[in-house]
Amino acid sequence: MADKQPRTITLIEQQHALDAYLDSLLAEATEPEPAPAPEAPPVALQVVEPASAEADEIGTPVVEAPAVAPPPAPEQARQSEPRPEWAEGRFQCLIFRVQGLKLAVPLARLNGILPWDDGLTRMPGHAPHFLGLMQAHGETVRVVDTAAVVMPPDRRPPAIGDGGRATPSHVILVGQRRWGLTCDGLADTITLEPDEVHWRSRRGKRPWLAGTVIEQMCALLEVDALVRILERQTPPVDDASD
Image (cartoon, rainbow, N blue to C red):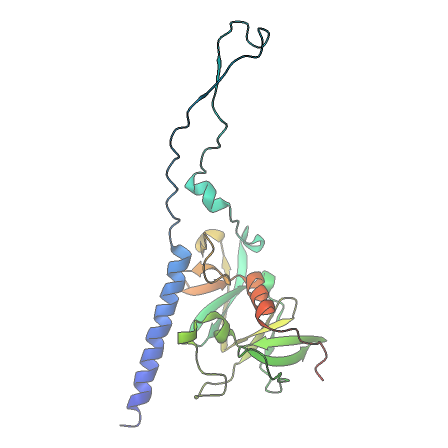
């Protein structure tokens, strides 16, 4: 009994940390827009004398106000950052699990699903999230540890295979099959209306987060932004695996 106690506490602490992280994702997506800036003080009118009698037959000075565009309404400000093009209407998503966290990837950005392959070609010297290369459909896929990418440093699990962490079950292909995201299990495929998602209304510290699906309590990936992050953080890799 004494041997099981430390592991029970660890699991509870991990679950609390995961719950807190999910709460932070929900808060970021639903955070209200900042209040509009106060209106500028009135600008003094400018009096312009007519250049000639033809310009103003009465001879009365012409009063002109500088052309100042009114500040956009809050609704207009939110619309200045459009939703992803795949979310203009009803769309489908695949929900998968990564270390207890549920993520959703739009099917419009999903390029395939592969079973995990222990025979990855390791590439020493790369970032910790980069696991190696695998071949699929004639393409070289760069496989990354999804948890190491989307979770903050203080909540990341041990490396795959360390500390009792199990190997993933699948690799989700995105970015024209150039990238593979590890997952611990496939949950479900759902159909969503755009108004069922709390979309990010402004840029934040997680550009890979498109929004949150409250009913499923999961984070919706902005795959294009995630691929750009991976391209920046991972040195170029030759397509040849030798």
